[in-house]
Image (cartoon, rainbow over all chains, first blue to last red; front, side, top):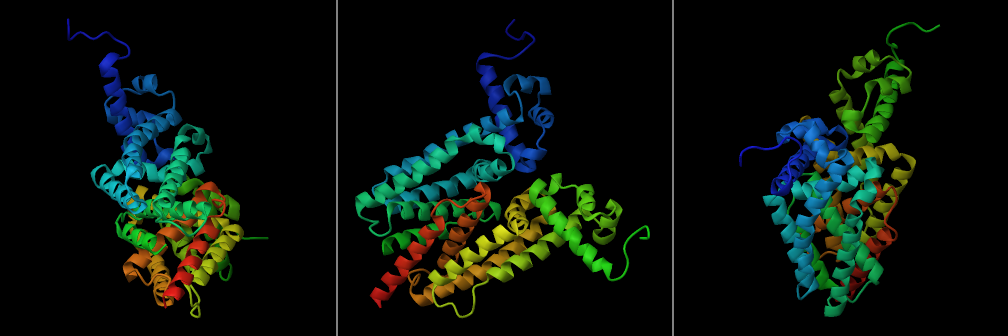
Length: 199
Length: 204
């Protein structure tokens, strides 16, 4: 009796496991093929299900992509944000970049997926409103970082706007360039912390 | 009346150049997988077989577009010998890069999409190495200008190089992704170097 499964969609606990399995398979698939060339049928097959079953969970490719984004961001963003509670801006930079470095080492698909999102958005603008949280997160993170530097007195020069833009450009540049060239290292982090001591 | 088949003689360099230009735009717009040899041939006004005559394969065509585009871009953004400060070199580099993106958008777009294409297609991984070589040459030079001027004299050469790389590429990619600069981002970079230049001078 317990073994007998009714036909049709799985439900309950199983259902969220199936969903998670799809998301993890899809993340690797998007990494390997990019959004344009990714195929729902192939993702279903790689996950060990039928395309029909996959379509029960995700109505189309954009829907699946935004689900992968949400799952990945929910995993990564909180780990980065917690460093905004560091005592100093220098430690927040040090902590968040080290965290990114470790996530990249332990879950390379997560950070690489996130680093490629803006490139996919450029090519597929219809995905934009599905990952809105990304822009909000970025703005929140860098303005909080600068507010912190003001509070501790670490950052006295430059206007707020310039400071936010400068650190955003440098840290996002580190993320993009490191992932795209497959060379994520912490030398930029050291440089930024020393730079902050100069300000 | 034109003969059938491939063009001959002097036309050949001209045709090759036209194919490269069309391919750059096609790959920049549709990516490597989505890039169509048929579309490239159509825009040049030749048969697809003529494209293969000059470039053997799509892979070879992509590689040649990369070589030609990288040389054109990196030669024009290399800092001038006489630059004394990172502030002025950076200003020059941002201006040059902005001008190139405005006048030759397919060049910037092609180069911006290259690293991800290389991740998707391992056969292009050696292009990533070449890209790194171009970058290193320019960014190391900028780093040394900054160390000598006092702007970055608190960093090692490697640290200064990586910092410059992150700043320049961050600015470049953000601009590429949004198809416009993050407002005031270039001014923010320059304000930072101006501050470093002045505080470096004060220390001396």
